[in-house]
Image (cartoon, rainbow, N blue to C red):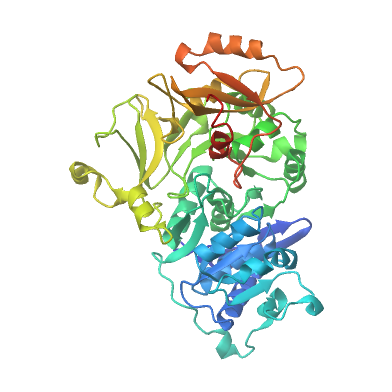
Length: 528
């Protein structure tokens, strides 16, 4: 079994060299070819002077070069930094400067947008462009083709050893969305990535026959997981840059996709569309993470995809993936996050530092091999999030570093977990602690609502008032009183909304999650 990130491809290329590893449009790339391209690119990086643990940023959409760049970086002893292709120049500049990038792999068009900001990155010594003609290549850049061709033909040279990599070494830095302040770089080891792949592939039962559709960015740990779980299993990953949800369904049918991972906003849209038999018959499973899927959307999907197993998952970048709900339990455990994934231990700790009893709310704490190494060059923030359990729990659960999620959860009598809310998202109104997730779940059942975010806004008497920011199903036909009557019928008095704001769309961070911080700032003076 592989122990380092790049071995996920190398080992599988030995066992299943002819299997298709990647597909983009009509172009397949088999494991043997992919492995050779990774080796060539790693050699090219070393010839450009890449040193051990130096950072290599990949700022590209989902294309072959993006995947090759990730794996070539760790083979060459570096640390890869996938940058969300949706980010703009200023955001990219911050990431490159923050983690002191030495090499940037990007396209010619993206480089032109970044040209001036790149001048401020003192540690950047190499820029590799994936699609640049010779006559257009800037003098301080290198074309991808040239980097790949800088190989020694001598057989002895071709066997030259690459830097030795230990499983505990840094492999990647993934930047969080930055919904609160500037984004933080989460440092992941080879062990984090490989063991995460093993755990997820285990409960998804991934095999070499699977074809996974990659619609999420590789800068998102959930999106990166599509590569790691597939390559561990010898499966195929189909790369897709979609414009409309219908493009996703068409791709499932065209490529006979067996596994699809998405976040709630996309699932909500996919649930409302018709699925052709070619798509519904091929899809073996789908997964959700990045937030709770509304029960109405889940019911719609299960209705149109009766042969497909839904896996509802919970994870955080700092621990990759934490829990999943077995599809067999969905009917019996509505709203549950499930239990710990293989090789992880999940504890619920209250404010007194004790393990919570059933139905008692506390903070989710993740323990095990998936816990990240910390935040890049942020000792104080790392110390807040990554710390041992209270001393009195050491004898039972050990004293190693665990990750404190900041999420409030509770368990039922059988140990199944339920999400209550983020510590910093919880609404505190008239002395009550209110879960936005619980409120939103109730509201998603109403036909007037397409999407909704419940946020707490400062109020002179209540502490916080509840504001519903709603994207309606039909703005012209929206009836405020009808929704308020529904709330009165289905919610307790202390959870009744104090104001409703209709919008054409809800703001999102680069990973597709609703940007609550932005909404809170936008409406902060609502009740003044």
